[in-house]
Length: 165
Image (cartoon, rainbow, N blue to C red; front, side, top):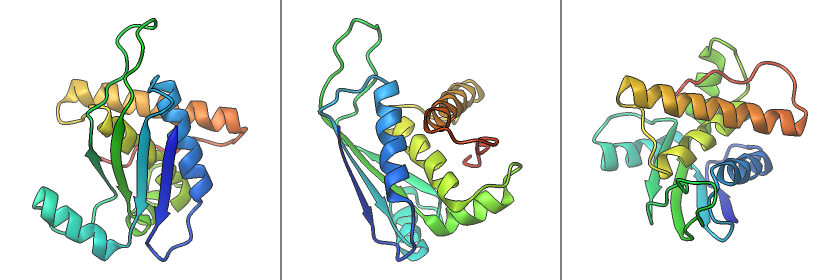
């Protein structure tokens, strides 16, 4: 799995954890090991520009996903996963820090960035949360991936509650 993490935000973030949880999520979703993903960490101004340009919405947001090859997890356990370019995930640590502090289970900026990384991966794989049933599926899968990764790393305490909407 080729995953690049590029921090352009000026904020110190745990890039290794972002890389690790992205790799874990993609493996759990059975994405081909030769697929490629890019994660870019930007400041609030850059995120706001992307948010306006691509979503026509004001202000910075927490995470944006830009799919490339529209890869999907294989439908059956014995299916060979397709290989390709997943796309880009853009994260904003300033928004992540604020959301982590406001969450029901308060958590750190880095924990929020980990959650947002999984959220971005799921969007790249075609998951969405516009409809209640889609939201339940996506957020359930997101929680299972984050919880699985945290357990594998031996991290204790409650997992971050979903703060993305």
